[in-house]
Image (tube, rainbow, N blue to C red; front, side, top):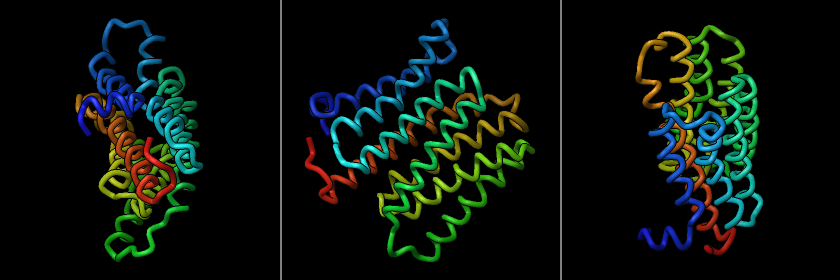
Length: 218
């Protein structure tokens, strides 16, 4: 889509990209904490606004709610790790329900193996990295979300891969709690993997709903 068309027809999506990309550069800056927290929440929060305002159908509103929980989690994490995790957990539950409504009818054996690997592997890795049962419990929802996204009929290159990027981002957070505590890799990759994962999920779901005739493009 040309830049002018993006500005005119998808201003909330453009605003999200600006907020999400720029946050990576200012995360460690001198900006006061409250403003930085709001900046952090704006990237994914604006994805939710994009989905909600322009596409008035229930499934679009469901993915908007997922993004709203994500934005809330982004901000609450800065003050309370458990509270932020609970917000993300709620978002995963909404996402799983949405993806199960759109289950792919023709899953092949490889697709099924991938889904099972995500469902089991994500919480297993989370526990292995942290040794904490509560982290593994959260990661069970994370893995379930990724597995459900992979098994849905939403475009896998966007929604499925976006969910995998999200899971990879969280696994890096867990690694930072354990074996990669001194590494700069999680610091560099957690945010871009997470934000672009959420971006791919949103545009993938909305684009698929449009192609299915759920609403007319604005």
